[in-house]
Length: 372
Image (cartoon, rainbow, N blue to C red; front, side):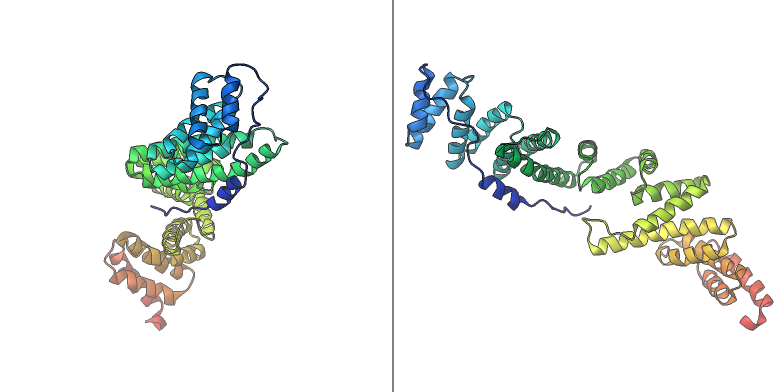
């Protein structure tokens, strides 16, 4: 399982929020003469926090549809947060989000409150709310106001943070069915996320563990769309090779895998990357070399199989075949010294080509007495 790579700079978002005004809406019209104006005056001018909060709670209970309700809710929210009344703050925050679904600043604050409670369901809910708010802001028309500018600056960072939370949740999930569901949702909803490629690879490998046939179908669709996922490319290439079909694609996909290994994947340690790079380079080179042997392109076969051989050592069948092919390829291109060396190693190696390698050695030596 890949490590969680957190690239979101939470301190910057916190600074943006801390530097903004607590209230975003203008104070209510206090020249009103209706019944609720009495409470509005009391809220506006009361200095004692407990009494002020009591007036606001009374107003919200009696006049939930009043034009000043959003301003009252904001005042309540700020006091609840100051008093560490998190549950009440989240309830009021929910009401404010109903009024203004693009309030990405408030959604992020509520998400941080939820994280402070360490409640997974609450965190998930507010992460989804914050993500939706951020995407609404980014997708909507520019707002030429200080508030609009602040939201537009904040939205991409909040979106990145919620993507990180989703990615972390996927990595923590041990139930395969649930993980697949989370990954499918992530891939559909976050096509531009920095975690998209990592989730795509994990999605493919998880299906391969559960249903190889379905994994192959997914991989084939992936390589038809774009050839940037090395795991999908090698999976399809090896399947085609096994079925002895579309050998041109086997070579093309294998060459693409080797090219992709020139760039280290993000979110993976150097040791993990070295292991992955070696394994995939070996597998891809084996496919290219094997097809080159079939097509009597012996120089290409020699180059590719030499590259593949160190990574095939754990597989007796493939190692035996690679040594035998290298012996034959070097014989055909006139490199008798290496032809003898590879056949000798193959003859000492317990594998399917051991007996034939012994025969080849006898023939090569009889033809080249100077290379005894």
